[in-house]
Length: 620
Image: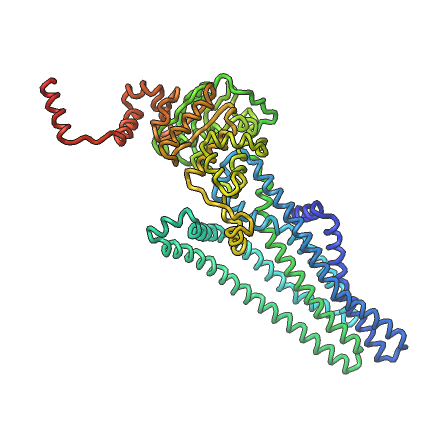
């Protein structure tokens, strides 16, 4: 009932007019068959009893009008239903994504169960409310039609309605059972379908195409994809067979009841107990009741199945915030003193391993802090906590002494700029790819150009076919459109960038927030050549001088000039200090730095090494 009420509420809010028109036409469609059957009976009785021609003519005209309505109303009803479903679908989709936007952190988007539910909500949430409304009105129409024909059957025989109703009970129970099994199957196959989709997307991904062809793994991945498809098809095939057998049995039962009623009517007419019009009415009524009963059962069953699927949508839209937000958050003032991690513990699941274990560190205002550590040391997790994508399980993170949990997350993030290691490549124009870093400057070409210059992207962007208005994607064009773009007769079909060019655009997004309080740079130059890397870091030092920065990189030559270096190891702060201090300490940082430095050292000739050894022994 909650699903039905929510679907009807969505329908009313989406379009009162089309909902009312659809409801009225559905009721009219339900009444027309009953009226037609009665008009046919009266006309046949008038003809066979020799009634006056005027009455017979009027009945014939009324029957013709009913026929016109029968031919016209369903088409208008289908249009009203389709338009109603479109409007409901749009509203439902907007609500779903509005709720998703209100999730403060990332936990739900990294939870496979929630992702399954979200996918089901996306798949069925937009269409299901409209289908449910259609189903509810169809059920209502079927009830009206059925009651009308049952009342008609009472005129012919008092026991006939009971027999017809009794034959509908097995049909209803069977269809409800099938609906539950079908909805359960949808949910059970969700991981299987997701895995199939993963392999399908992988086999068509341009980024993966190089390795797939080089390593010759296409057939292997295709086999994995097909295995998932065969499993899904097998489950659906077994469900279809169950449905076929069950519906065939209930169909035979309905046909037997209809056949028996027809034989009884023919015998009654021959014996003079009922009129020819009664026979016509009975035949139409039995068929009408069975059709209405089948429509009722199918409508209930389909609505039931859709409502079970719609439950995923309702669970997503009714989900509370994944992170608590203060009822009266404190204002996020500009950073003046710094950010403090105080005994921070964190793990992604209650039974998972600790990623951070009692981290204590300070990010002083106006300084650059370099985060260093091996893979899995907790660097990226620390950044997620700093942006309040998660909350610590223990301890606190303080912004000028205020716990991040007491601040408005949107205000906090508005004071942060970032380049993440897994930066996004948006299928938008170059200008939009930069402007998404600060929507208030999306229409400011001078500021976007300046950000691109700082990131070293201006040169290759201006060389694109439409400069900053060039679409950086080829997924929106196909066939004649792409050919037209190629020969200059159509729209620009978009271009593909290299990894380094995409990274510069991500840097430009960050530079659009260069004046913000905190800048987080997670491997900002990993895909750049040595010259570009040097220029990028020099520009960052110039633009962010006197501001607070956090720099993460495995290339230690890019972080050695940071004011403070923090070394994370197994979720704890293992070392801290400047480059010289940590080198003198001879610990983790020194070992990592020396290993990388050896890769840049010039190899010496063996003879030179021997001479050097002899000199040392001779004390020269």
